[in-house]
View (tube, rainbow, N blue to C red):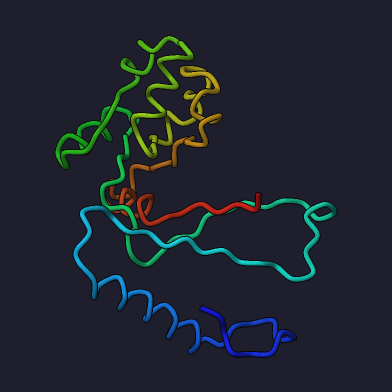
Amino acid sequence: FRSHQPDNMSKINRDTLRDCVEAVMKNSRGKKKRKFTETVELQISLKNYDPQRDKRFAGTVKLKHIPRPKMRVCVLGDQLHIDEAKANDMLHMDVEALKKLNKNKKLVKKLAKKYDAFMASDSLIKQIPRILGPGLNKAGKFPTMVTHTESLSGKMDEVKATIKFQMK
């Protein structure tokens, strides 16, 4: 969808953007039901940004709604968090299970592929590079820290609602 504005404008009118998104949603709902989760890719061009001179950037944004409810998140925790994860029927691993991987690159890589994201207890997060090596960091899946004062299920929803973006 192209906006009907002159080229010298730097922003798209909010109403125009909303209309375009509604048209896309209406079109996707109107046709036959798909047997897969449909996604929309958003590309943004930046004016007055020279990728050769200016540095690249990356970040995260927390969305209002959870875009991937089936996202597999594993809790790497101390005993308190493991008990809470079991009670809430969440995927989890304790320190002993992590030590069994023994910094084996293939096993750590397999672990990183198995889950979409990780959460770790605040007491354990400093030990993870020592226990597993750099594998999770290389895969871009270093765990999100969880404290004992936070609800594990609340933090899980927050991790699922957070998306990453980067300037390639």
